[in-house]
Image 1 (cartoon, rainbow, N blue to C red):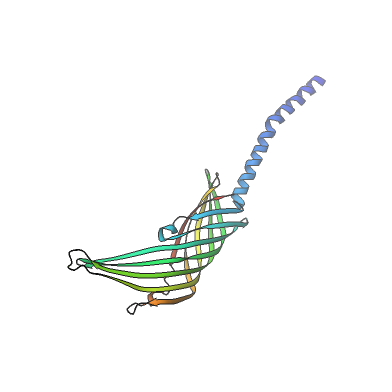
Image 2: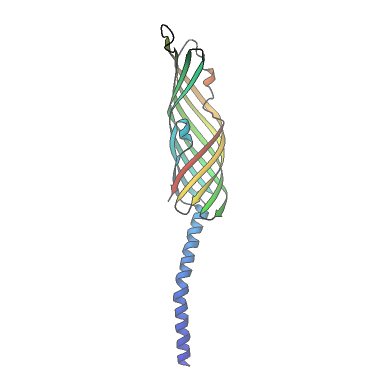
Length: 232
């Protein structure tokens, strides 16, 4: 009888040695899945990939403050050059160039609507509300010239205006964050902003230039973004 009990105990011990590591592994995986699925990560950092097309370079820092709440801080450095060419002047053309330099800073609150798991990715859908402050120094100039067939060649440079813009806006965003198992994520979002305060200071204005059309230009209406980053 003692031999049978000893054998049973050895079998139980052997099974425990086999099963316990698996249980701990499953528990660790479940804990990791819960951490990623419930709060994703306490800190995330990303760069703005889409806004660089229009001359805005910056990034975001995202802090997870609760299971369904995130606070985001976005900073963009603005440095853009926009050219408009009017070639309808026969042998000449008019080139208008606008330079924008400045920055924008935007805190945002995001509420997580839901999450779903797909293979190695977690999709996190959110709705957000943001405040944005923007300051831009704008210079506009034009260059009218004709080609070398003109005799004598003709060229005329004009400084149109120099203006300093300060404004703030409120808006809503809707989007999705896609998290991978390798601490990499992509954020896609779109939204709408409304200007709540703005001030346009004219530092220089050509006599024939009207700056009324500049008011409200910083409210870009529908806004979209693509961010690429990592979470810790």
